[in-house]
Amino acid sequence: MARRTQYNLKYFLKVLGNAFLHIFLGISYLVPRQKDKWLVGNAKGFNNNTKYFFLHAKLQLKKENCYWISKNRKSLAAVRCLGFKAYHPASPKGLYHLLTAGVYVYDIRVSALNAWTYGGAKLVNLWHGVGIKNVEHKISNAPREVPVLSYLRHPVNYVRPHLFLSTAPLMTKHFAECFRIPESRCVESTYPRCDIFKFSKEALLSHMQRIEGEEMVALAKRLQSHARTYIYMPTWRGSKKDFIKQAGFDLARLEEALAKNNALFLFKLHPLTKLSIDTTAYPHIVFLDSRMDIYPLLPFTDVLVTDYSSIYYDYLLMPEKEILLFPFDYEEYVTEDRDLAFDFDEYTPGERVYTFDALVQQIAAKAHFELPQRQWITEQFWSDAAHHRDLYQAVSQL
Image (cartoon, rainbow, N blue to C red; front, top):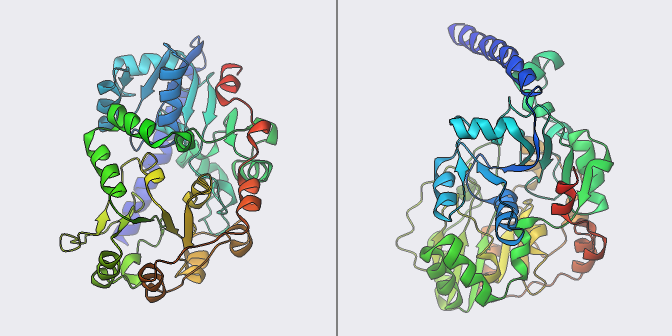
């Protein structure tokens, strides 16, 4: 009873606090905005589509009036080390730019910048992954609240962007339903983070040297020294179970298969995954920092092992790469974690294994994974470049 009372009190205080903050949001509508000032930010770090949007704006477009805003102090330091201006949203300069910028660019919710200062600004949501999952308002198994209370408790969930980055007509229809916006607000283009796949290996190493640092350069060269590199990137399980253990991973057996073939196996887990595994005894297995930007490294890998993650669709953009699906918990994932908007078998084609035994057998046999439907599935999620709009021009025209 005491715990329930405490929860109800916290719930009430949050709703009351947000109600008062709406006054500040209202005031922000009265401040004049500079149409050509762009603020770009990401709550979790200097990564994802916002990172590459920002870098393109600064390095290619030479846009002076563009700033990085984030509560993540590591990302602020990273951007400043590159010679660009970055501000915490609670700092005086950060608040000034938040109240005067004409455009906010983010990839999840506007709260990545500030949930109470966007009045009068144009909002651009780059999102962070195409795919077959229902998201936001289309999640059928999400907990339900009284609409008014839900709005007061989570107001950022109801903010509608003026421009939403989609990638193809199929995704435009999907995202319009998920975010409850007109399809006309969607601009179909490629993801900024995927532009890096067009770089040569030499250009990638040069990019890493300038933007990422020596540690990533060394890792890329390590990948090149192996005959074959696998990267395992599963989606996040909301149930928070130790799904590595649930999938039956035996690191000793995996190491043995990899060593015989001079292969490397990278684990890149979702940042919300909590695991503690000692890998020092396995030189052919690497657990990457879950917060690192993996995109510059992907062209140096050979095989993606995944399940329901949107990385599957990004990886399709590198035609020479292979994909192996490992959906070991399909029924449980669909019922307990996330319902799917599209049929998994039809819209995620490719060779599959359902047990760790089958996975390690494929690795030991140096198997190759064909994807006859590659062109079709790529066309569903990525429009032909000839039909793309220029994302940066679309933002400029808001």
